[in-house]
Length: 103
Length: 103
Image 1 (spheres, rainbow over the protein chains, first blue to last red):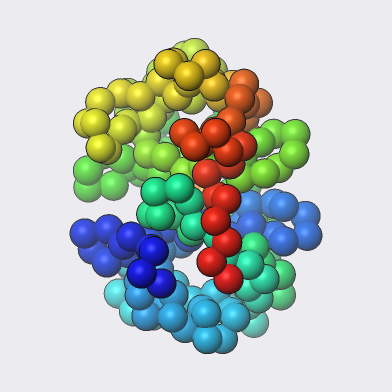
Image 2: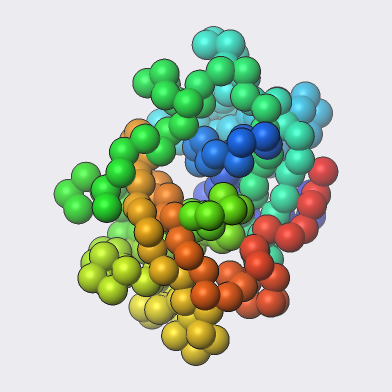
């Protein structure tokens, strides 16, 4: 846990990738508590920047993200989580939050 | 371009994913200029937060990232770029920056 570098707000971005299909599902932010909860429960927890509270992904919707593996990048300031999603990652009902193609 | 939301520092995180293998390669940050350059050249450009300058990925190493598609997420504050990498994404020589497994 000491290897992770949080930013000046105490947050680190976490990319969620489907462990089976390799589809990138979403990016959200973790603080130390969310990271700890994720490790303990093996379900993705984040820090909601809009609501300013701990966010257990799928707690309401049921679309939990079961964490299979956690990686960190070379400068230790981004996480990559391989997950088994219980349902769509996106609040719009899309499988991935990255549905809109710009180019 | 107006659909993209930059943060309070004028930056947006961009995830790079190998367009063929679907491997997640790295996450870096773009400002408006880097995004514009990326669109114009079809090669990934970022804003280097450590050097505080425009960063044409692979300009020195040759490991350019040829951009095949750009997506944005549902709240328009994260980009996902599908790329064809000319070489390793990581400065360590690894194909991906996410080589270290924590859990």
